[in-house]
Every structure is written in structure tokens, then in C-alpha cells.
Length: 161
Image 1 (cartoon, rainbow, N blue to C red):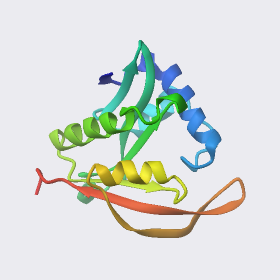
Image 2 (cartoon, rainbow, N blue to C red):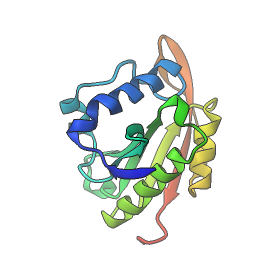
Image 3 (cartoon, helix red, strand yellow):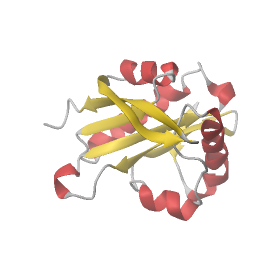
Image 4 (cartoon, rainbow, N blue to C red):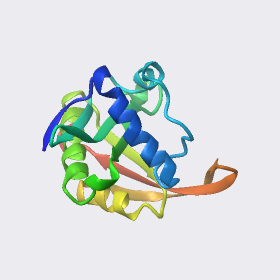
């Protein structure tokens, strides 16, 4: 497995994996994947990666700012997705480790994720990477007309104080 920077040329494969996650209704509130320009504008220019296995993109991860306010400049939200067949082979573990290392190199002191409670695999992945559960945000948003709860998790950097 090779972890490399996510570049515009990877967008078709990244978008396809994103659409897989959207279809599960357990990965995101999004109902469609945006075009490259919109996605690119909402994510940090650093800390975006793909995992490549056997010449194909098996997963991707990226960080987005949680707020434009200066006081939150070191807080970022994690997005991490992998293709269905990639589960259980270390794709998520390698991607989240790359995000952690890159985020710290770019001055990010807190990573956070909002995960649907039924997405147990994602919660476990984050826990193994040092994230802790902050709490649940009950009925925080609607997906397809249904109120959904998220588990808020965060990881504080051990490097940036």
C-alpha cells in the first residue's frame, strides 16, 4: 500500500469512493459528492491523501477547517473514506496516521470527527488512532428527512501544545 498526496487527477476515483460512502447512509450527511472545485475550496491544501493498492485508489482522507476564525486555526475536521473491498486491510489506519503526522507538521492541534453511532468501524478506527469520544450530538441534523445523531470525537496533538 502506498500513501500519497491527493491531487486533482485523483478526483474521479476519490469521488467514486465518496459516493460509495454517501450511499451507505452511515458515513456522511452529504447526499451527493461535489465537483472538484467545490471540494477543493472546502478542504485544507495540505493533509489530503489517497491510499493506493494494486494501482487503484483504495481510500482517501483529508482535513477541512472547522471555522474561519483565527482562534480555531489549529482545529480541523477529518474526512476518511475507503472503498468497500478495502476494509480490514489497514487502509484506514494508514490514512489516519498520515493525516495525524501531516496535521501536526502544519500546526493543527486538534482533529475532530463527527461519526454516526452505527458506524462502529469508523469509531474504532478513530479510537485506535488516539481519538476520544467527547459526547453525542443528539438529532444534530437530518439525512433524507430523518433526524440523526453523531458521536463527536477528537484527538489532541501530543506534539503541539
